[in-house]
Length: 224
Image 1 (cartoon, one colour):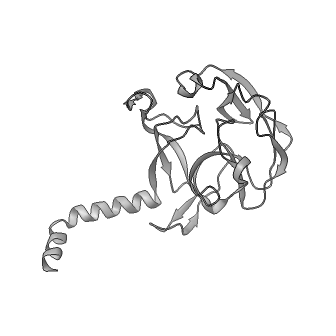
Image 2 (cartoon, rainbow, N blue to C red; image 1 turned 30 degrees about the vertical axis):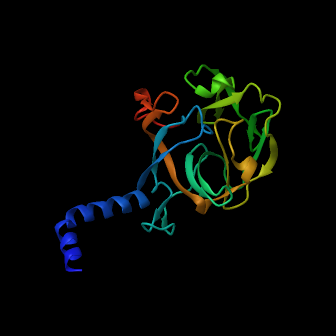
Image 3 (cartoon, one colour; image 1 turned 30 degrees about the horizontal axis):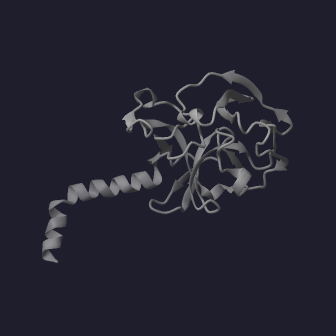
């Protein structure tokens, strides 16, 4: 026991630093590896994303207990959540807020009776396009603009829904890769208390399809 206490004393600076880092990552900011393509082209497979864990709540470190609700997720936010229904951590985009009436018809989004606008985009470098060719568009709803991927093969066979009303305390979340995302179309609405933070930018990116070489053009890229 004396030897252990001596070891702790000699390394107290390092131990304090590590404890602070653990608490910081638990309650303030963290980074996550993205292993799937459900948010392509916004987030690509192999991206390491920064997550602002204090964007919506100030949590007691190492717990999910909210000490202070700072804000609620806004439409268009990219959120990270620990989903009970999915049994894993998800990264999705907020589409429907509590009380919103949302529909997806022929891959076109409607929120509270307002149709989103779509403009063709040219996006290259998505490896999934080799086996599953896709169209890319900018989806615009009010002041919110972001890229969406539509699978050519899935055209006319998408997972349309609605119109449905988002219940109080719940959110409707979708992936930007609309035909390759397990989201609210599979799991239903997501509770507010499962949302743990907001993804803000790409910290760094490694290409798993190219020997994990760095994609330096994506490092520090803001997510929108």
